[in-house]
Length: 202
Length: 202
DNA sequence: AGGGTTATGTACTGCTCGGTCAAGCACACC
DNA sequence: GGTGTGCTTGACCGAGCAGTACATAACCCT
Image (cartoon, rainbow over all chains, first blue to last red):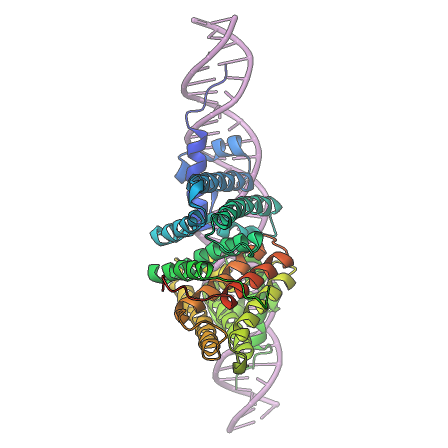
């Protein structure tokens, strides 16, 4: 009986997400969102509630998409540690390809909204945790396959790699070149490949 | 002949800096700045010009202070690579001690203001470049002292370490624990210490 | 075809924003 | 101690903000 919506909710969320990603939370006005989504303010409030809620939806959408992309990369389980390097490479490619410098929304969200918004912190933490889990599986398989020395702590190593991806993202925003970022990938690969435990130190 | 200012300019900049660091650029109002500095709006405009200019001054101040702190750490030239690890440790300590989650202003500035503000990008790039230079000297000395394998590319390795500090900063905002961050320090140290070039791969 | 229900568009609210400005004030110099 | 300079104060501006109210429109079901 009710009048149906004439817009697609997920599409609107994605449009809002891109605006937030470009401008950040505070600098995005409802008018911006209205223009980007094509919805009137009334519809926005009717559908989502206030600005904070739209942002959360948009951020959630971004995180889900990131997770899906990563899952796809890590689906190739047989390559062991190579899969993890592939993920690092993917982050580099994304960073480099991001000509508009929108940047990763997880970084943007935590930087701008934490500690003000616990919901953002929680979603970001969960998403990063997922990435680390994927990396860790890859590390462990690499250890099983003899690609990675088994004495290395897989939790620490996977967190290091997560940390490096976050760092790459940050450096990308400061205009470091593709070659610079690839150099990071290459040296960490070299260090992991060339690691042999010394008898003295554990 | 003119009436002298009754405030200390550098003190006002520091107060403004802290507000910007906490709230970010867009979310900081002139009223916030006025309250934090104790100056009237008129005085602020008279002294600094518009909001953008105050921000740049504040950011510049932050970068200078970061550089000074880092220079002090790296002044101990004899420790070679240990100095670089000390720097990483310092970033961890800062991140952990930052109970208010203000975060590093370089990260905040590049995330929020790039590409909109080229001046911010430039200042951030210069500051990060300085850090990398310090790290690189430390790496090279470490190689000379036999702490670090000489076949490793010092530019790449120093950029990797810079990258890791940026990553640590980012993870800190997502509430990773002190132990997690220390684990990152420990594993990168282990990788560098335990690296031996394989005859096959360079 | 009509009615119930919800979506939509628009005008509007009260507020706060960044920024201005004029009037007075305090000091260093004469 | 007067005078001029430029600092300070606080009222003020138009614009844009997040959010609301309400009349109207569109659809499904009966």
